[in-house]
Length: 418
Image 1: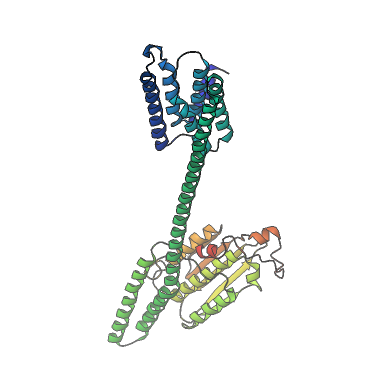
Image 2: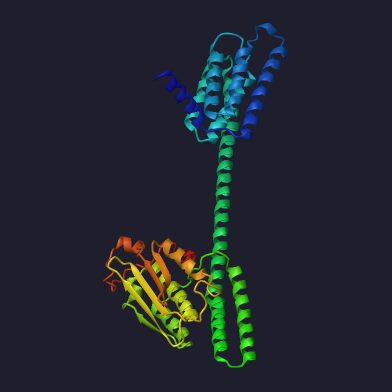
């Protein structure tokens, strides 16, 4: 290994190991300074010759103990090594109080679940102490007392940190859940506004325009026009409340045939006929996510037909399930020349933009526009298999298979988020 490689390896070891926090640095730094001062004072207070004190081992031990607060692995290992050498090397090192530092290292390493390393470090310091000591019983008592403090302290710190981490995780989960709940509430509120108030206002506006065109009384026409303008203002206020949150469908399991019947009844109020071509058992042939989007397309497309189609005209709906399970739906209707621009005040593009975004999220596509006086809306949605389909694959052409293919990831929550 080259010199540069060796230096990089050593630097990596120091950078990759766990670091001590601010509290640990203060504790170990203060403890190291205190033990150093106590050892020096004890040497002088016992009346021994100051010139015989070896300060270097004491300083090295204190520095290694202080380093444990920054780098627990490196500092603790250095402390154990320096202390063991200081005890074995002949001389007057004056190590007494500094030996207490090993129990601080043991407590630190136990808190990090370094149990084997803590045992090795303790043996590395205690073995020389028993060898050079002249009172084995006192040394054993000190060892037991130190362990009685260090081990519970280490496990206590370990439990406290794990508990703090668990609480922080719970807080994060709660924050995410609260944000998700708030988003769902806003989405459901926007959906309710779009599917009820907004569409009712559209009917009022359309009815007002029709009445204004049919009446021959200028005053009545003016009053109806004023009513339509009020409805337009209300529509703008509704849009302001709806904001930019996408519109979803809160009842994705409603049969498409039922949605179609509702849409046909709504159009019948303006003498508009909606001819439909739906495959048999279309709900069994489509996944839940497809049915959810198709239901949205039916509702939004019908609303646009109500706003822009000619009175007494016929609109056409076609739904086809391709061999790979992709669902393609097309709506076509003649545009009333007297109607507003299809991206104007009535629609604002909100529903169609939302549908475009929703179709893209499902991996599909949406296209709309006018072609020679005919308004076209076309949506393609690929089939996204649920967990049951992945376990029990079945052909789309076999709708009688009772496998619950419409079960989607996320359950009710996933449907609400859709």
